[in-house]
Length: 130
Ligand SMILES: CC(=O)c1nc(NC(=O)[C@H]2CNCCN2)sc1-c1cc(O)cc(O)c1
Image (cartoon, rainbow, N blue to C red):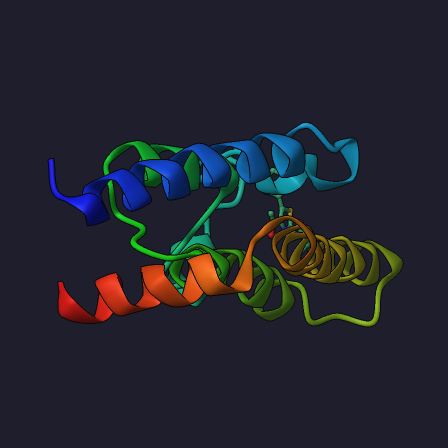
């Protein structure tokens, strides 16, 4: 086990906790599971790269994230997908856009507060080398 493998294990423990906190917030329940393609039949015609919090938790376990920035890129993708799929002036579309922006801002705020910036920089160095 190299020194950097210990760092990535610490990153995984941290990201699991962030993912759990986001997925347990009732405001974000629409983003906790993959969009139900039986229910939303045109979804893949509009959204080319679906993403959700359950998929992100699986990606943590599969060592897909080498730094918090890569994790936040997937949160930003959840948000961008919801903004793209819900562009209408209707109150239902407006509400889901608001929830998506709130998810994105909460994720970034949680990481900024709880993550040591030097640790993230070390992880980004590891990510660049891999
Ligand atoms: C996650 C998402 O982006 C999403 N967007 C929707 N938009 C609409 O239904 C809008 C689209 N514009 C026209 C009027 N209807 S429903 C929906 C969704 C919510 C869930 O609780 C589970 C799920 O699988 C998908």
